[in-house]
Amino acid sequence: MIALREESEIATLRDANRIVSDTLVTLVEQVRPGVTTRELDAIAEDCIRGAGAVPSFLGYRGYPNSTCISVEDVIVHGIPGDRELREGQIVSMDVGAYYLGYHGDAALTVACGPVDELRRRLMDATDRALSAGVQAARAGNYLVDVSRAVQRVCEQAGFSVVRDFVGHGIGRKMHEDPQVPNFDTGVRGPLLRDGMVLAIEPMVNAGKPGVKVLRDGWTAVTIDGKPSAHFEHSIVVRDGPPEILSATPRLIWGQR
Ligand code: MF3
Ligand code: CO
Image (cartoon, rainbow, N blue to C red; front, side, top):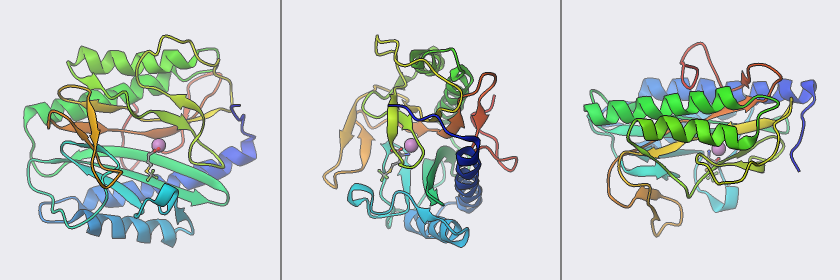
């Protein structure tokens, strides 16, 4: 069952996602060679708690940290630790905040210093794929329209969409119905309606789509070792253009 949110609930979701996007802005400013993923996580936790929220990821199915920081061939769910960022790498940062009973969730990928053409194009395509998916999330469309829009942008750029992880409904719980695949599953899925809240989150590999989860039970890496990017927004389906809850004028992604 997919929830339809009241405007009062959407107002709180807006606040939760504002905390997430403010945290991401702060993280982006801290990305530089030599910074550890643990340092980034600590900064994010301070930001989230400083705003009166609780990190959504911490303790979720035993997850040990407040953020996921996924470097290079790590697709998603990178556990913060001693790893230092190096110039030329890309880093995906995923943040969730629980505020007054509702969750916000968003992610983006940035470069550490100058990066090569492949990584630039990969980040650009994933960001545009998110934007295409967001724009397809309108009342009257079906869920598969979102999935197809995302997939088309990725594959036209010559990259592959990850099948093993999907986006999701979000609200009182971080993961609610429906699942939001980034590829055409062959089923139309539910009709989208005004007030549905979705987290759309393409994960895109420069090479093959295959995923391997490391022995820690979380870290998902590309099988071929090539880099991967991840962008996510939480949005409200509307009768017209969707409302991007996790957008911020201070940093623009998934809005093209
Ligand atoms: N944005 C991711 C998701 O929606 C982050 C979850 S990390 C976890 O699944 F640790 F909380 F699982
Ligand atoms: Co998510």
